Length: 226
Image 1: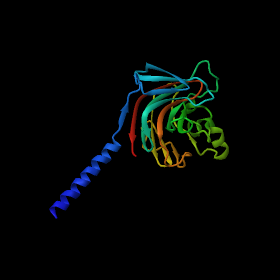
Image 2: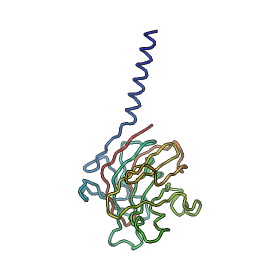
Image 3: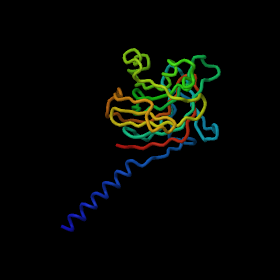
Image 4: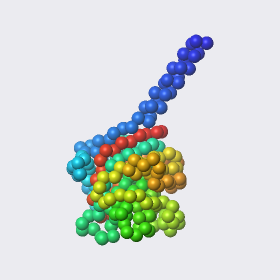
């Protein structure tokens, strides 16, 4: 009986240790990291408003642009980062400063999920525009135009933010659900219950930028829960 109890205790401790290993956050260095792969974007190491950061600019505004974190496959878990986005001076006046996170990126970059923010909408004078501050979309089949047409207002929401200022976000992903938290809030500002690539998606994480935007990223932390 003692031997069985001891074995059970060892198994429980082993399982707990394994669980802790799975859920331990990993800080991923961004500046000077040779495992970052720029996709349709230029990347520069810099110091932005007091933080060591990478600056990301899209090369072609009509194609997905991100900085892929190579060697880190992500399915379920938590992504935390500080980001800042603002319209480039020479871009279209209606550019909103698009900055966010792509996740479950396929090896060929053909498919991924994405949650991003439109920085300029956070303090817009029109309520409808404010309602478009956060955004989910799924590449390639569910772009923003398709989602707005088929599911009006479902994949967008409002959150207060300022263009060019650091904004802390957290994205929790579990199965087919993703939740966006901003500024350390206890409640999500956006909930997606039907990620379009399904519940079992797996792939890389990418720092995402839209066309006509100067985007900065710092302090990336990833917790894998698979």
